[in-house]
Figure 1 (cartoon, rainbow, N blue to C red):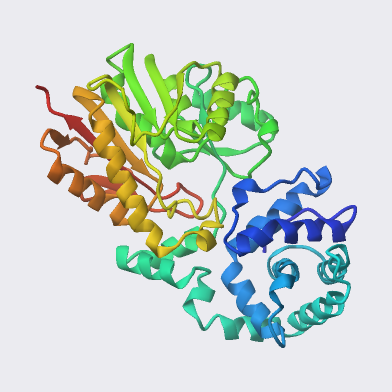
Figure 2 (cartoon, rainbow, N blue to C red):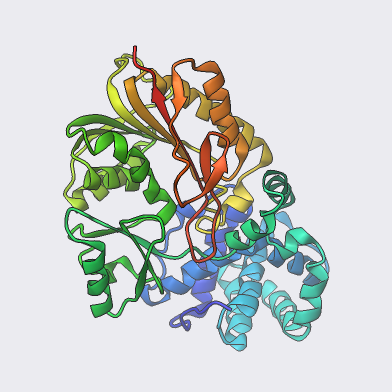
Length: 443
């Protein structure tokens, strides 16, 4: 079971808020990115987020159990009660919430949704789950999609892509990722900052592959991190930090190099590049709202970049051969970061992969034109699917005569995947990521 704060204040209001927040996600009309806890009492926000993320993470099993517990499905207008039932099931199975609170407060929350009639239904379903928990779970878990908490299409895709690893990937997807930090090497060494963490009561371990990374043994609020507001440290997964390592051979010997971080939001890699190298960086993204997060991040860290709001597949009027290095962190399925964004399992569809691969190809072709001869492009995704990764790079190389592969093969991280390297999500370790490094031939 996962630990969660003991509910305080109005437990019914908290659970009603969680049901309202979850409904658009369950109906595949919204995402957890829009999750707003502003209406929840500060003391209850940790539990609110635990409920929302936890329900999304375990949704296949919760929905299968709900089907077993209900005599007939709720009507379409009562989908909020369905969401409330899932919230109750999740508490009983996964949280250290007293059973009487999980049942009573969840059932009572139906009144706050304007449906007092559902109180009795929810109470009956949840009390039956208390009595028959083991038998009901054993029954629904006969379906491997339920047991592994993944939709059928996604489980099939993982098996096809990684026949020897698919089960471990699914298990890693179901385990919340660790909280990993990136030390601002301009401000402090990793060893010194680790000591500062320990003085604050926070234990950590050095990342295995990312030299600026520390993984906390126990996650905490960023406000508890020494020097966070002063730009000493940021939160970033170990796999995401490796982009800087791949660009190092190009940028370290070239102060003032012109660099483009395409599809840059929310700005973690942008900031890491500026912390690591003395470069002239342009940060570009097509989402104006997400670009504000890039600006906020750079302001906190005291870093400067040229911010551009533009579609990287268009870039009309942009010069050719104008960047010495490009980081293309391409839009993708997010299949390597499901543990951090569990709503992906509900929101993503099989047909999305084809559409995303087409977009990635457009981005590669257009951005390649802006790379100077002899320049380096690093292609990255947080995906584990070959269509977005190894197959994407293979197709690009086949149609691009002046591109050659420089992806290192003598590195400790990841595994060979075509002309790139693939990292699979690891429990208590890094996320799933793909990298390929390409060089443009000199004229």
